[in-house]
Length: 271
Length: 360
Ligand SMILES: Cc1ncc(C[n+]2csc(CCOP(=O)(O)OP(=O)(O)O)c2C)c(N)n1
Ligand code: SF4
Ligand SMILES: [Mg+2]
Image (cartoon, rainbow over all chains, first blue to last red; front, side, top):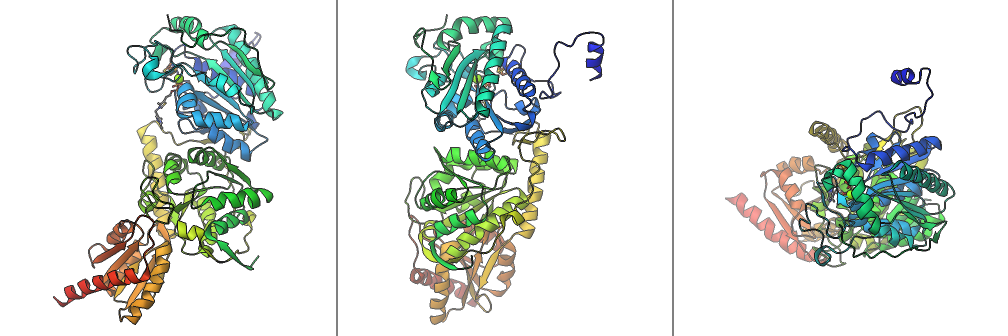
């Protein structure tokens, strides 16, 4: 607080840490997307005055202790079960705002059934899906969203269709379910995309207040450590290799699927 | 309220959960307990309970975690294979100390097994089931009346200790019809405040966090020590059992649930055959009535344990007995309910062996 006063002394405040972010220093690797997503999410909750109305559900993954950074009431779910936990919370507290925060392994591998059925029931909460195409927490193993040919600690020769199947596009899958209302794919690797992501979060919370149904925001993110790249290399790699398979943009808006501009082959191998 | 009704055990448990003020039920159908979710889908919903049939027992138990963490009085019910699926979630719930009520209407296993009644899930229920050092409070009803009564008791104990409570019954108790009376119970007078629940952080307090994660060993050990301290308190305060015909008995049977009912008939048959036998019926399977079992060794020649499994609770009887008297066992598996006559036959054999030993 004292520091903030010194900083603002005679100067204009351009950014203030929202009350919804705790003082705890984040443990994420340099350049990791998790920290940025946390910050934006908490800014929105702060700006919209939702701190006392929001309950978050953390996953098992690198963001398992998200509750140490988010200054709101939270529950830590078992691996993959965040949407089931959130269902329990939201059903007994229908007027509160609930979100889950989940990685690709959590949401699209071990938790696939819970994800699909929560969306199919149209559970009135927001799912934040951090797709970094890898299992960050356990040391860089293949994720269900790992790209074809992508080298991970369990795909030393690169991901092969024959043995490991295709990168799963669960966001497109849940968009086909009538229970979902707003489904979008965003990223946070540039200042512009961060702003777009923030808008998406605001929109999703508004939909939740109006009890519209499930909203899911996929964030195409990075994992510099797991990808074995510098943060800059990672963001460039994301742009070149993740976007062709996981194209950014809205997939479902106001309960209606957005017309596809281009069809991208799932079989594209990484460069 | 105090009218006598004729109901199935499953229905009685379901009705009791409504009267006990259960806010939310999450479940997945499985024989022989589907009457519970069916009853609640009709009666529960009509009377204001949130009742959800969900995609799996895995989802159900994690919804229980979420709802209990948000401060609701909540319940799930299942039968053996479904309860196996729930074990990860139960371990998390025990660790995060969330009060809730679980019901297992035990059927024969292992595997998909049979839909017939069994007590094969004793170990799973009282020794852990899921990973880590934890205990459920386990109550074993032996009548339709207790199927109802233990729902109230279960919710109250869960709240009191912030601990999951399991009602362990078998398929026969779930399916059989008996008289039942529902007591006057005012949920508002029983539900305890839950200041730890995640309901939205207000400025006057720190955030509430429901978690079972403690990355530093020292922290995790502290949590474990706290849990163990709680379990010692439960062991000191919540042991429940019934003694039937124990005065002057030469041999005591030990049985819980349905087998305890059958053993009451065995007592009559044994008396006609000139054998003085009584029954210890554990009601709480955790905490287990070790002390009374130990104490009674001074008055008897041996214990005879009857279960619908290969011999699970008998291990706890042996722990209580600690070698002081012989312990015999008779069990049927695969969903077979032993008859009073076959139990008597085996009891007679056991009585002979303990009498011979005495002569030597
Ligand atoms: C039941 C269970 N299985 C496996 C694990 C180990 N585990 C922890 S996190 C994780 C994968 C996390 O990857 P992701 O969800 O993509 O999150 P990220 O770390 O990449 O953000 C795994 C396999 C676990 N905790 N629980
Ligand atoms: S391992 Fe990857 S996902 Fe985890 S904190 Fe580091 S960069 Fe982020
Ligand atoms: Mg990941």
